[in-house]
Image (cartoon, rainbow, N blue to C red; front, side, top):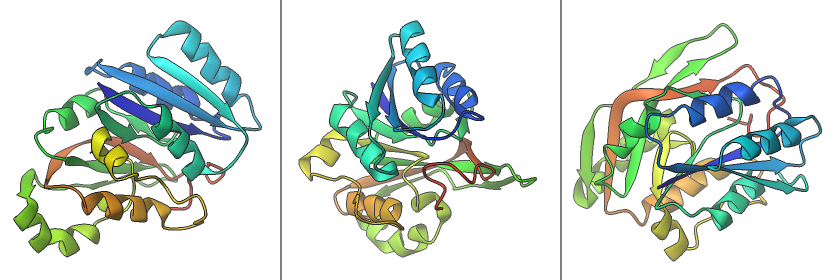
Length: 214
């Protein structure tokens, strides 16, 4: 099972698009953890409505603490073998989870994505390639300069590796905490798979969102 962790804050304009795209996934073995980070709008109530209609949806309400604390709460409650993150103003192609899960022979799967919003639309595409530990060490600097490796979304993480090494987001950091989380995880993987197929749509139009520090 895949645990999908979505921090929710001030995103009424986008919330239905995001959650509907997740619930419509062709790969159906997942749980959706919606973390209401003290959102001042109606997002919390909307999350509860989804949970009442679909047993795969679990909602957690908390005092506002920022995107890192929201993601950490999701990690504390996730039950899946794999972890992925989605931002509430982004959305997914219906085959997004299936395309990543098809590559799950690696400890980490990194997908391609498309930037949308603000009259912009362009693709950030990786090649289909498997890296064992030796090849990953040889290529890591070339990979880390790619935008795909600087965010927690667009990836599959092994849950047991996150827990075994006590990997969480640093809630004291106000910038680059996403990249640090990815870097810390990479220290512990033995293999990595990159995917050419993209299905993650990154929204640049929501300037008020919880994670709009990218």
